[in-house]
Image (cartoon, rainbow, N blue to C red; front, side, top):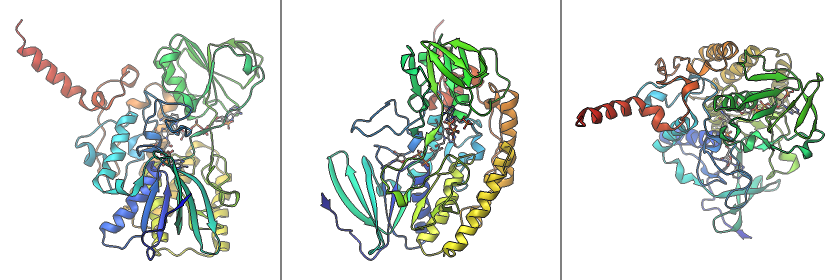
Length: 471
Ligand code: FAD
Ligand code: NAP
């Protein structure tokens, strides 16, 4: 193994794992400080894929990638934002600035991917990212107080190590499937897969589909398959049903108990015959590159324990985790976290003692335990964002207004799960009211950026051409 000497020994070094929205937020935070004339540490971001964007960087592959690494992506064809874009807008880079015209509130994945890239392309942050590089292992050296990272350059099949003063883990937590076992499943004759490997609704046309789970993946994959022609969709819940007004063709049943060939039996004694099963049973926080004592161990919740301000690992605050919470807020929350983390790493934000940090975390954990409704969850994460915003110079935005929009969104979904994506909201960054999309979501079978952005222009251009044609 080659030991590469750090190029610049007097500058502090920051290692970032992952260039999804969280890792990119960290890079952008440093770039903002640099643009403000501040001296920033040396920053290196390691990304195992060949491009940035994390989940938003769609992969048609499942299983392993071209270098044999587990595929990270869990997104699929026809994936549209499942919350209003006004709730995730970067407050230092608006949708108006990027698209130069108002767009709808629920864009498809390629459009949001384009937006994420827009802010980053404006700065030179690509230079800080080493693509096709997997972080294989990290060790913290108590003597030197540095992180020793073992890195695999996948392209040239070379392993090397580097040292860093700070480590930012931005590797996401919706990639490693939680795959439960149900008796008899090994004899089920049809396809059984986890949502992580779902790449689009097309194969389920005319099929009777069984989905296990009752959260966002179950809801969205169920609705997508219904939209794209599945014969029936049955959702099987463990704790609570999703409980919205389902259209005919989608139904909810209690938890699956076992299979007898292609027949599934449920807790309430009912049963049904299915062609395929999709486990929408969530994901594991998995950090195979971290030793036990540095690893965040948590379920998917709004306030993972041991992270002061939701980011600093309390036993070793030089270890920073971004985006590890369950997420109502996404891009703007990652930004708020990254700005706070940056200020700590640049010695602009001293942290209180370990014991004081523990007390602060306990306060949040206690509040988290008392949450009951989805509205409570929204308010909790909104308070968390406000707490972060008060600590850094990330451009302020109206969090209360965003919380209202989340609540509106929850109501819209309850009212009509098939039409909520046709609603529009107002930006808290620019005040712009979103456009109504040119096609109702249920009729829109094409999720390409070109169709989304230029449909009207294309029609006009087409009309012009037609007009010029001799009759
Ligand atoms: P990720 O986007 O997961 O990025 C992590 C990055 O780390 C990846 O690029 C990965 O390759 C890299 N990485 C991991 N391990 C290593 C390693 N060992 N070495 C090097 N690199 C590594 N959010 C929304 O706001 N709206 C939506 O509509 C929405 N839809 C979603 C749909 C699905 C199916 C899923 C799973 C999530 C969705 N999300 C949505 C949430 C989404 O996770 C966040 O928007 C966002 O992508 C999280 O960013 P992240 O950077 O924290 O993690
Ligand atoms: P999740 O929110 O963590 O939900 C996991 C679900 O699996 C819960 O319903 C849970 O039930 C169920 N479950 C877990 N173990 C089970 C078991 N052994 N048996 C039965 N059920 C079990 O995960 P997710 O739904 O995959 O969502 C992950 C992220 O992806 C979210 O951020 C979401 O917004 C995003 N997403 C977005 C879209 C989009 O449209 N843009 C689409 C899909 C996903 P309990 O309630 O009983 O725990």
